[in-house]
Length: 258
Image (cartoon, rainbow, N blue to C red; front, top):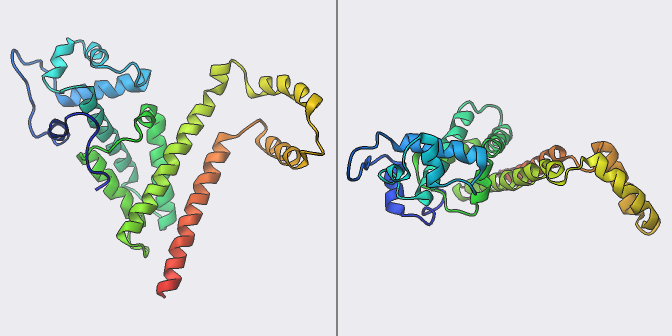
């Protein structure tokens, strides 16, 4: 399975929550809540305000209940985060059920489904590195994604490694892509506005002969991008090169075993 234990919360209690082994109501009057409702509200809070402002109190406020009502069902924030991860992992399973085409197309589809997951829930990117919760959503996601590379000549360990390579690239590249998309908002300048300020200053000091390669490539790139940088181009270029590498490895295995 993908990982061995949970986050820093209580693994035993988290496991009960993930697999719905018991709905703990605690003492006093029942709150009328369920773990499912709490998890849904927590995901909605995290999606809207991020992890920094996610707390048991903010979740309770969204549900219109007292904070202590949540503790009758969920021990704390860390256990709740594990259940949230497991829940959103199940979304990727649904998007991979109709996998089609050759193995490369299927693996590319896995990558795109994971990017979409991170774009819907960018708070997930803040939770790495973290041991994945061993819940039904995470395990079903792992199983479904492995099917993209099943039967193509890889060993079980190589299948796991190929999947990890794609998912690792997608996670890191999506984080960079989302960060770049906020640059204008954070700086208060568009790329064009920034370049119109920097270009005249650079022209005064840049030795174009000494840095001729940088000038040539930089000019070609910015002309192609129609701007300073194209995060979508960078993302797609990287994903295809990762898939090229896996394809080369698969073809090499095939030649060696043939």
